[in-house]
Image (cartoon, helix red, strand yellow):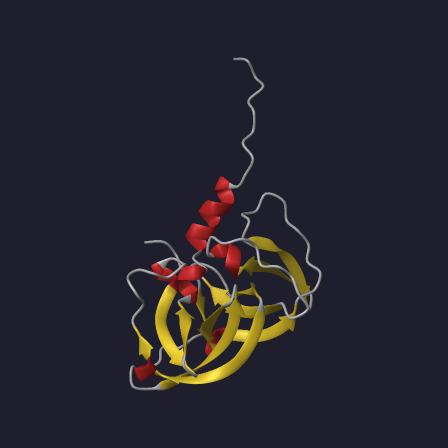
Length: 179
């Protein structure tokens, strides 16, 4: 089984309420648990890193630390998010089983609000119909009469999967030795 990135998120019992950061992405509302979020910053200039998968937009300098920025829209197999004045980067502290914690930025269209969502209001993910991979969805919640897709951040930021996608983005080299 591949190593997964995990956030500082602690498990919430099924009967407890939890707070989630809601945000928009391609006209749809998503949510992630706030316990794994370090901060939210305005989208600024980033440095493009050659030969990375399309969903890695580049890196930013966050108080001296190099932080990769993942475009969630592209990670979900959609087009890259258009950059607007409301574009934000959500900084998440993530770690794998065999490495120290690392900050990762998630590029989103706009951040909406922090919402308390009762666990009883979160339904299991649908087996079909979502426009993103089913394993990326932790559940479906109804907030203010609208559905919110609760993301499974550990699956979205799987180290093994992102590494294999980065490897497949590498340009093949030509062997010029005729032997």
